[in-house]
Every structure is written in structure tokens, then in C-alpha cells.
Image (cartoon, rainbow, N blue to C red):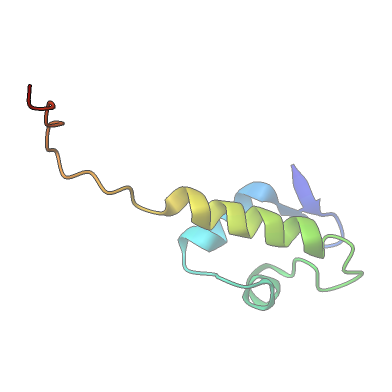
Length: 71
């Protein structure tokens, strides 16, 4: 889906930029041009960027089995 129509920036492009380390809207604008013209996409662009980082957070999995309660 297109997030920024002015600069043809897609959701996929924003997620890729997040994977490459982009953390803020300013960085995203410099990298992709997203929100660099009219700015009406800024809120959605920030939401997609934030969501991309939340999904990438590593889950802690120690591989340990649950301990059964003592009887």
C-alpha cells in the first residue's frame, strides 16, 4: 500500500528502511522522501515505522521447560 503518494513510498519501503536502522520520521524522510512534500502521510508513516520496530523486537526464549508445581 502507498503511504506517501507524493513520493511513491510504500509500506514495504518503510518497513525495509526500519530494518536498515531508520528510527525516526526525519530519517525516513531523508532516506525515502516520505512526508517531504505535503506531509499528510506523516502520521501513517510514523505508525508503520513504529510497528515495524515493535515486530522486530527479539523474544526471549531460553529453551527451558516449565517447572511443574511441587505436590
